[in-house]
View 1 (cartoon, rainbow, N blue to C red):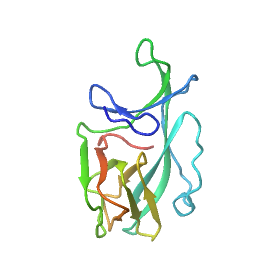
View 2: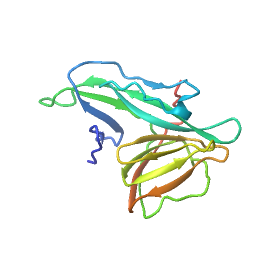
View 3: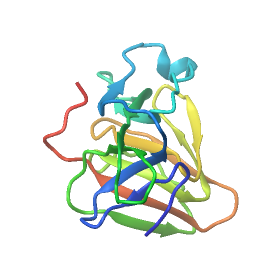
View 4: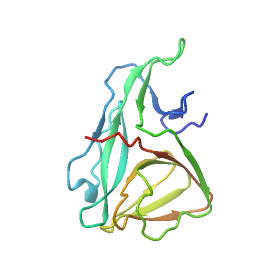
Amino acid sequence: MPRFPGGNRADHAGRLRLVRMIDESTDFELKQSTDPNAARHRPPVRRSRAAVPYTRIEATTAGGSRFREGEIMLGARTVAVGVPTMLIGGLPSAPSVEYVRSDAFDSTPHPAPARQWVIMLRGTIEVTVGDGEARRFGPGDLVLAADTEGDGHTTLAIGDPPFEALFIPVDPAWSES
């Protein structure tokens, strides 16, 4: 089973679970920043032991794209007898997951082919959105590519290949509201 920083792993049904060791309880929910300046200044998302931050790439009404911060809240669960309590949160996903390995991630501007979670496993990429802001994502970073309309974003490989990532389609019924 693949392991990611923070203890992410796939469960037996193939769903991705975010897992962290803990000894306190909290409820599961998804939160997204509504601060319109969050994309420009990237303020730190409030990080508690019970949340995993993610970056969303979304389309703008002008046809470009921008970054927005969010977090996945984790809840305390015992996953098996004899295993310490862990923090677990689900990613709302469709049934298929793609493993991607490439010598290059360089691209021309493009929208995401579908709303999908991107989890970098190996290598670093730099994503530039329509307003010119660029961010780098490396192993363990969680990105929600949701700019399925407009000009989209560009992706540039940073460093030595290969670059590896998981692409996980978002459940079409899921909304971040």
